[in-house]
Image 1: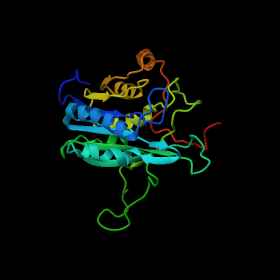
Image 2: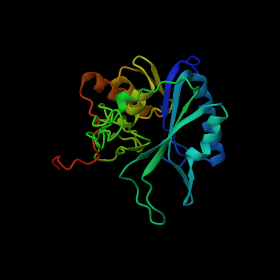
Image 3: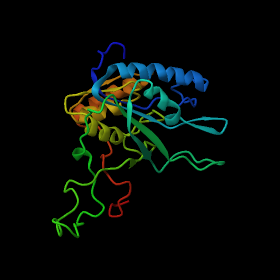
Image 4: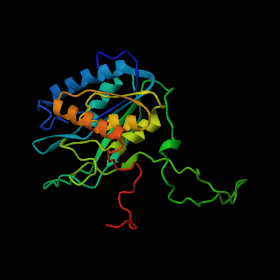
Length: 259
């Protein structure tokens, strides 16, 4: 990250380790983890364009059965830099570990911050089908005319997108892989074609693929060489036209689709 120019990145989107002892991280005390996150966040703020967005996707740190919500714990680090929270997006998914002494977790959080009030937000490319597409105004000067946007509705701040498990078309050896569709929505809404997207915890490259699919410039880094090699192979497959990804707005369940 230090090799990149100040304020050169239009979107920083990432999911850092949660300090729970996964194979790609070394578990530390929560205080040390927060210090490490503070250093990365400070560098991210340095790189962020004045009109850019920063999206930090996190779940829970768990210690001895107790949950510590990382979005709450890290929020103050972003505010120390004067960033403004635009949305606290809830990413919900149907599958995960089953808990015995608490309800099974089926959501994580994306904190979307901007540096200023003048930021990119493109709603039309990420609209989703309206629940009532033929709804009409029932009074006033537009009575009888369609009341909704013909392109669809705002996707709101709760996103139901399957996580990447064993039978997912995008699955690699990474144990906590980003679905490309989750990042696509952020890329399309928060950047313009040709702009720079950075993932400082790149993993197997899902954020880079989301950026490249839509004509953005992808940047990323990771400390695990195996994951970088997988990311590069996935990018090669994308350019070769053989990469399989789950469509961004594909319904989680379609009763008309063959099982």
